[in-house]
Length: 278
Ligand code: PTJ
Image (cartoon, rainbow, N blue to C red; front, top):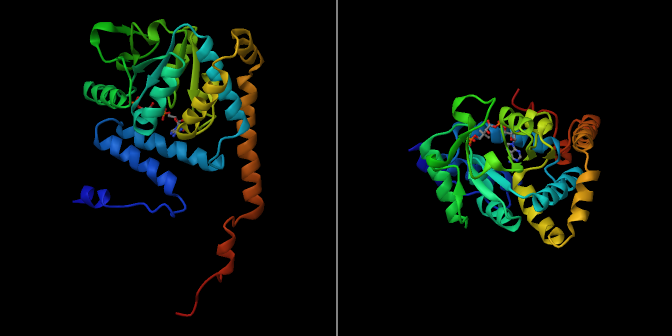
C-alpha cells in the first residue's frame, strides 16, 4: 500500500527542490530494482548535506579537478571506471558515455556485494549503452591486498591491472588500498573530509549528477590536445590546494549564512508568532 502511494507522487517542476527530489526518486527506484544498497540511500543523504553547504553548484576547484581527471584518463594506458549502486542509479547513461570517450573499461565493484546486485547493475549499464561490463564474471576474479573479504574482489582484466581507477562515491578503505598499490585514483565526493576525498590523487568535490556531464563537455575540448599539454596539466595540479579551496568555500558560505540567520527573505514578512488563539 505504502509503495503504491509513493509511486503516485508527481513532483511539479515548480517545486523549489524539484531537482533534488528527482535524484532521490532515482535512488529509491534503484533501491526497489535491487541496484542501490540500503546504505546507498543513507550515503546519498550525507552527500546532499554537503551539497547544501557548497551551495549546490559546481565551483572552480571542482572544474579544475575535472580537467585534471580528464587529462589523466586521456594519458592513462588502462583507465578503469568503477561502478557502484548509487552511480548506476544516478548517472548510468552519462558515466557510460564518458567511459567510451576516454577509452576506459567499466567494472562493477561493490561495497555491499551480492550476485543479485552485480547482475542488476550490469543490466543498467548495458541498457545505458555499455559494450562490456567487467566485475561480474567469477572466472576473472582477483583479490586486492589489504582489504577484508568480500570487498577485496576485482576483475583481472580491469581494476587489478589498471593504471588509473575512477571510484566516485567510494568507501575510504578501498581508495586507500588502491592508492597504496600505486594506482592513480580519481574520485567524486561531496564530502572533502571523507577518507576517499583525502586519499585520492584527484578529488572532484561536486555532485556526481553535475560532475559527470561536466567531464563529458571537458573531454570534447581536451581530446585533441597533445600529450605534453595533458601532462603539464597534471604536473601543475595540486589536490591539497583543491581540498583547501573546497573547505574555504564551505567556510565562506557558512560565514555568510551565520551573519544572517534567516536566509529566506520572505519569511521576515511574517509576524514572529500568531498569538490570536490565546
Ligand atoms: O553500491 P555499493 O554496495 O558499492 O555501496 C555504495 C555506497 C555509496 C553505499 C558505499 O560505497 C558507501 O558506503 O560509501 P560511503 O563511505 O558512504 O561514501 C560515499 C561518499 O559519497 C560520501 O562521502 C558522500 O558524501 C558522497 N556522496 C553521496 N552522494 C553523492 C556523493 N558525492 C557526490 N555526489 C553525490 N550524489
